[in-house]
Amino acid sequence: MSETLDLTIELIRRESVTPEDAGCMDLVIERLTPLGFRAEWLNFGDTKNIWLRRGEAVPLFVFLGHTDVVPPGPLEDWSSPPFEPEIRDGRLYGRGAADMKSSVAAMTTALQRFVVRHPDHKGSIAVLLTSDEEGSAHDGVVKVVDVLTSRGTAIDWCLVGEPSSFDLLGDVIRVGRRGSLCGVLRVLGVQGHVAYPHKADNPIHRFAPALHELTTEVWDEGNEFFPPTSFQVSNIRAGTGADNVIPGRLEMSFNFRFSTELTVDDIQRRVEAILDRHGLRYELSWRLSGAPFLTRESELVEATRDAIARITGRSTRPDTGGGTSDGRFIAPTGAQVVELGPLNGSIHKIDEHVDIADIDALSAIYELILDNLLAKS
Image (cartoon, rainbow, N blue to C red; front, side, top):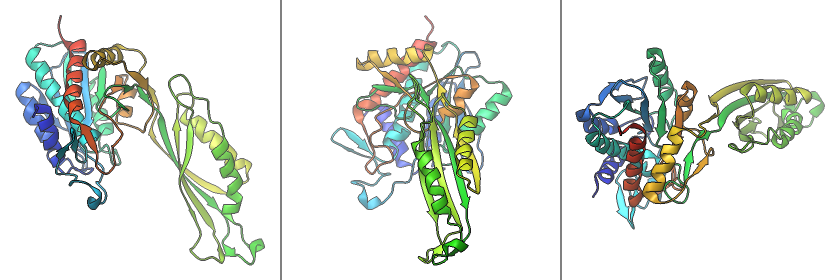
């Protein structure tokens, strides 16, 4: 059994359902501090965050990951217990296998090998792990970035271990992510008896034309890096539960996944214009989960492409799809950000798994990226 596979198994055994870490970070600390990494806990609330850094020189390369996982769901639906990792048919099964404990293990072993070979490497290297990526993300990387910024610590390159691959390891790397803007809309009406609609004001009826316009609006056409902006309703509710009562209020939750073609102000202004055009009485609140970011062709992108090609023999495709990641907190600082991890087909699902061969290959790719950027010639 390889060292990377062994560490992945040990990480999966720890039941780190968000925001729990369950000792995962301690396993990484045990392996890296003997190599000169200085460990600093930056915990907030129930969230654990560890900052492990070797060296003080620039440039600064950071591996970014998370140890928390989503809940496993019904245990009886799993072929084997989600926190008792099992190998079957060349795959390692368990919650977090792909998202993203195999990446954390691969980062750790890649660093072990690299530092042994290059003890006087250029610049400095850090690992940032959080237990609050799958949850609210309020006390994780976003707060660590605030601490680092207050110290004047600037990250030059950040490689996020999120599962980016589609069909084969390394076939896709994330070079950016769409922004995520959430909203809660309350359309106000007047409750009444369904037999006397003239004495009430049905918010469902009033809102229906506006909802149609919101769902058919072309928000933008996207660009060469991003697909068009998407508007999706995630929840809508109204009524008292009785079939003879006109409701007095409708509440809807929705989300925009938006490209760099739009700003938050653009979206908010256009939504409010549609609502106003339909004469609605409403209350509207917004929450920005993350702004869009993009790393164009750069040293980090080139180093990643080269490492994938040399280890796997295949070329990679840059992409900006998927959900959000903690990279959204690093990119605004000016850092180059790339996401590279295992296949994402089973993440958050029953019987989550990762191909065993990909675990060692991913560690080798990470090590070669370090070689490309920080090895002295």
